[in-house]
Image (cartoon, rainbow, N blue to C red; front, side, top):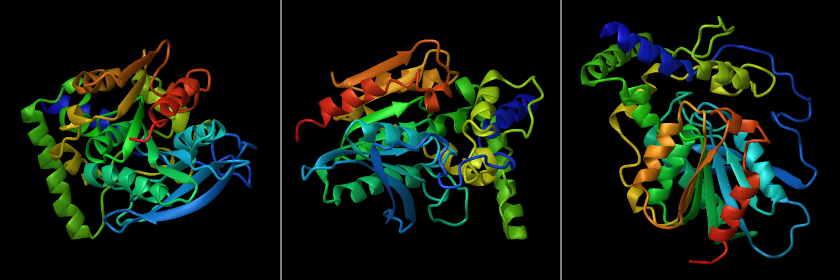
Length: 345
């Protein structure tokens, strides 16, 4: 049992950190994707309900008229920053006529919160609502027409936000992870109660050591170099976060490590308990070949109403939907938001 537990823990922690690397980007552009000449970008900040300052990039279509536009808040993947995948989504949808906000979650990137590199299912859900607070008070945004996009782990937090925040009129999840489920039960629910108990013992013993040392132990992350025998999805993560394709110096998965004891709150506080009560529209997008596909399929089964859709993209893995423009269904996503943010409800 202990051997199996260690395997599960190792695989879990592989996606929660990284090692150092030099970022190869243009001096005047700190994103991992090309800059568009169709939008204006503004650095903004706002506080969430816990008083933590969040920092984001606001993407505004050029030639903006006096008409108030629909808006979309975007965050994720888990361990990424707004200069990576969420910024790409925000910029692309701004090109299509939406005001968009890509933001760094609490304790990560340029956002505030101490200690650094901490995850919380409650606070990270709140981060989406804080983004809605901000957008609702922008003079060029229609506060009745706000949607959100959550990528990877923030797909789960985004869906959780939609269950509590009735101001969110439409939600898109991309290659969704339920971080509470995978942390408590392992991939494909392979961690049983006894193994979970041993995991909790390890983490709580670490709390004692952290207090004694006055610092926080870091979780393992993606390897500096691949050996070749890693699971395919680890290779996929490496191909995004650890290469010039998606590397960013502020991204935990590229250049840092999560605090090890962050896993405790994820184990003990499952999200999506009330997702069946979401009345607003939801579009869930996942790759056919993604190791994480079952998270979206299972979450979709709980949703109710004819305004819910699960879209599986053929011949696509988990990471393809981070930045592969040939795989990401941007036209479909834009049409979804156009449809469900069209009418004031």
